[in-house]
Image 1 (cartoon, rainbow over the protein chains, first blue to last red):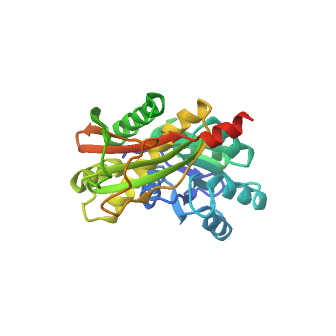
Image 2: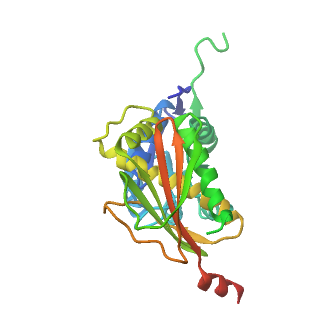
Length: 146
Length: 162
């Protein structure tokens, strides 16, 4: 897997903490490995929208990567409920069902961005930097600015 | 079953398999399934409901499933690992999700249900209004079969027209 310059939290230089929500264990593990190559840390996982809400309350991650099609409660509804309770929540929808209507619905209900599956690591990396904005910092490469 | 329904699934399988396996694939044998569906190996089933309804099954023999899972995971996954079954479900989810995205942008409305493992040896037989088409995708990891049985939902279409 590609290596990326680590993205850290600006406030304390600590790794960005992720909550990964997907009903597929395989997808969660893949996304987990991907964000670890970005210097991130997996703070929690959930396999459905309902569990995602309780996990968010428990761990308050920096970023949520949220699937859409899931049992119990789908991702867009879960994103809306999380944002109602935590207006600053940064939720990135990660789904193969990336049609216009779904993307618009997700953004209107509080998601910050949308990434289409299969996920390209370089795309997710850029989206994470964008969503973190000033709250994220990319470590300078060795020798930069010297 | 019209080709306009099938083509997005072929395109999506091409894109997803090529990216996951980092190698091109070819569309091989294509046939109508006359008899009852008979599982070949590890199979994931996805139901669609809405303007178009039916089911799609992705079916891979165990060695191929393990190679595909390894390709998608970027690490070795053995045939006995539960991750192989999870990977086949995720492959189905990604291909069908991408195809549905294309069809939705063409105006079709439907819901994709989460993939489930098809564990029984046999499935239902094709009917006149829901013929099953079997496509074989030839990859460097082995053959990936997509068994697709969809039909236009007249009730939904009529309701939308009123």
